[in-house]
Length: 157
Image (cartoon, rainbow, N blue to C red):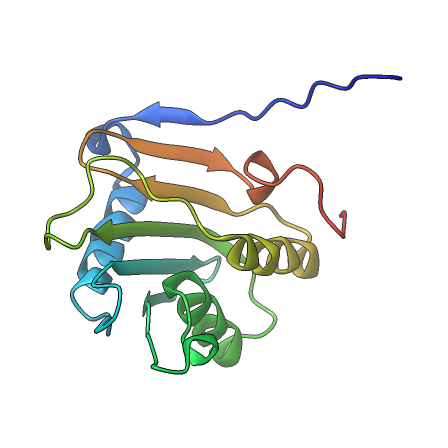
């Protein structure tokens, strides 16, 4: 049996250590948490997308009593960006969340597996990694590309 060790490179930083552009995208993701529709989980997630051309998009999770019909914040933001600018690469994706108490989470919240696969597809489509920012009040996780969270995937670029 052969064992492989797979490492991820994730920077843990404070909000003020990010670039002004990255800080802005985190603030837009935080705004997205206020727009979510979560009558079942009461867990509010916001996301923001910055395209290479400077266009910005906001997303938020949308729940539905028929649970598979809902959608995550990351996908609402990415799909809105893709609908407006299908050929424009995504530069930054920021994610923030509010817990059931209505407060921003202390720890960064990570995308679900389905969203991770959508981000992989986005990177593959445009042949460019996306800077991913996961916000928490304690710190922000910053990474260059989704493969830091999901190193084994269906596609490679």
